[in-house]
Amino acid sequence: MLAAAQVTTVILIGILVLAFIALMMSMRIVPQKVAFIVERLGKYSATLDAGFHILVPFIDRVAYKHTLKEQAVDVAPQQCITKDNIAVEVDGILYMQVIDPKKASYGIDN
Image (tube, rainbow, N blue to C red; front, top):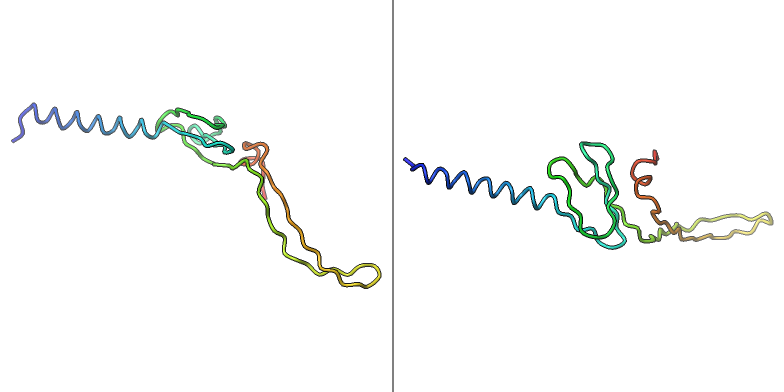
């Protein structure tokens, strides 16, 4: 059988491992040009900008990660006919950028 000191040591090691896991879950480093949306118990709580942040472990969680950089989306070429019956191929590039991360997460249906 294990002695009382050995049982105490095993319990202490378990508590230290649990505390280390909780500490690692609570620290977040947000890179530049990125925004994290934090939910507290499933409801919007805050938007984290670039830098070091500490969250409440097991209560707060990062729900969304948005890049604030401009993104280019290529639009496929399409055939068009003008008023004077000339076939023209139209090609385009769409530039998108997230301005408000909260609205990008919760304010859009489709």
